[in-house]
Length: 625
View (cartoon, rainbow, N blue to C red):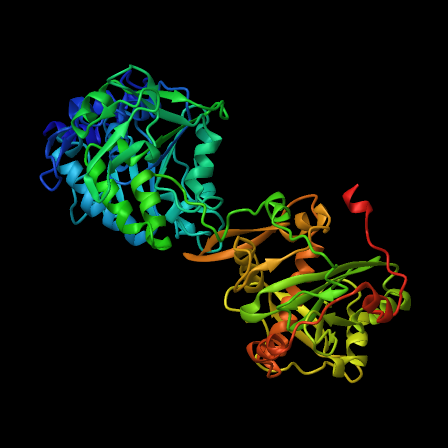
């Protein structure tokens, strides 16, 4: 009987091997001695650590003698992160008995990984081929998802399979491309947590590996895991001055229109580093931790600038081809640099920056409307102890002006605040053009949270004045305003219009980023607006998440910041869409007003023509104290 068969069926030998301590060998040493690359790879033959020297420390942190229980690799493509997983799997089969669980994004991806990467490695590496149970009619230890060996096995599952992630305890769990994992493994929950939980009984002896190229900042699983660790960066020595630095894309330079001339420039001395210098640089590179981490996670970031398989010229060429297309730029950032991308849609907005763009006015806008305003709408947010409202002026291409913001304090279950609201929305506003004073054409009042019945009764009594009760609904594809008018639930009560608030918020945030002084979508705010209002306007941030492989935007409120200014703006914007549904053409109305002559405004005129009936409305100052 040959050695393979003896090893498979000598139960006593297997039992003694399981009791013995793990061999004192690192993963990188095992790979150098035993790993063979199959003929299907670009560089077949024996594995050489010198080819990718930056992977040596990564692999050694996975070795049993290392104190780290979790290793995270956030990297670009074509770096070798999957080879780390394969080398560890081979070493575990050869030296460390137990169950190893390998998780790919989907079941089909797991099948393909076994067929194209694992099986060729097992066949090409003699130390592994002699240990894996050979396939046969009466043997179940070698299949598309399971490889048995003396004292253990390697199981391959998809992150979309809850059953595969919650069954047998495993000493080693290796998760590949975790940013491509679904949000939930069926109905079981986060697949990363499910897989990691299977190592709970092996604390102190377990190893958990997570690898991936990152995706979107704030959503990327691998970036979050990287930040929980010690955040190691690879420092390269400058050939000219000897200073160590972490190369970033900003250090890559080339002649205009000639990406083939790409080279690194040392940030310390400006010395030119050519592509031919890369092997020497990598040989002298050092991993350095840049954070304390949680003590059990060694996390590594590997940029594509280090890859021996991709040239700097190729990285520069791909950047030039992608920089004008946001979707391609994201892929390039993730794949070429191994960095997450914070896109403009989800990047936070600064209230300070917005306030710095606020516009000084000679005459307050709630006294004389600025040139360009054609239509007025109002959005009202309802709380138990107050009403908040914004009056918005709209012009061509939805350029807008925040005309007024008011807070009416009082118990909103009683008529006082509603009477004050009546007076405020009944105002007419003088225009800089010689046109009749403009009314507020439509009002949206929030009925979704507080005082729902009071809002619906209030709207029903004023429905012919376009005072609409509204309720926000999140989710992709929900229209800003319903196509068909809703039916009232009972007589005497107004219908409730359901708004697609996610789209309205996304449009608002995009427009707040416009820094042009005027034009389509530009939002104008008077300079006397309090700082807390700007904070409230950007109190929610869009976070991109994936559910069952589908991207979605979830709006998350900043803690400790009131978001009523945002809600009022959303409801006021929805009122404009309600007018569109009623047949309004904003462009036509704006054209008529623009055609009217300007009229001079004097103090005497202002005194002779009061703008609104005086009401006792309290402007909130305590929020800014």
